[in-house]
Amino acid sequence: MKRETIVAGHGGQGVLELATWLAYSQLVRGRHVAYTPSYGPETRGGKVRCYVVASDDPIASPIVETPDLLIVMNTPSMDFVPSLRPGGTLLVNRSLVGDVPAHPELHVVEVPATQLAADLGPSFPEAGPDTSIAANAVMLGAVLALEGGRWPDEAPIVDRVLRHYLTDRKAALLPLDAAAAETGFRSIRDPSSERAPPARTVAA
Image 1: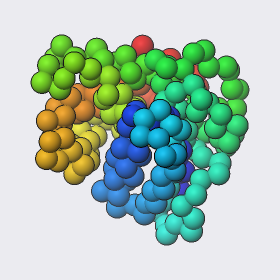
Image 2: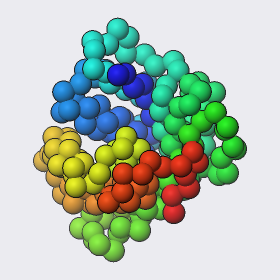
Image 3: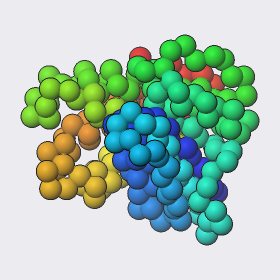
């Protein structure tokens, strides 16, 4: 089985980081993975998108044209919606994207990722004054939930992924990002349930 993903947003949202986490989470499961970033010269605010391809078989091309999953972190990135294949999943950061039009052929999931991350602030004062930077970790958890996993099983995968990338000074963010990933997971799926999300999910 092959899954093609586009992660899109603007510089400073951790789009590249989220894509690498998604790629590595598939790699540790023993799958073939291709990761291709695309971004402008701006450090913050410029458009950023990443292609992630995961497959049980060798990957012929790392470029994604009709993704199975599109993760949209901001309003301008909604421009990629027409590229989603029919039956594909649109995962939207509802905190920064307004009303999402109904797409009968798509599975639309809205998660207030930025707000959920910001709400973790009181629990993690050591992470700094603005924990909304962990919105990408919230989306990591949401993706894992959409893949049908259960949290007790996915937690070691999240831990392995985060520990691989959050080293040196970034290691201080490990507790925050781990909590954010679990929050994103639980916003989509009851960890004790095997039930798949409905056709259109609005996660509070």
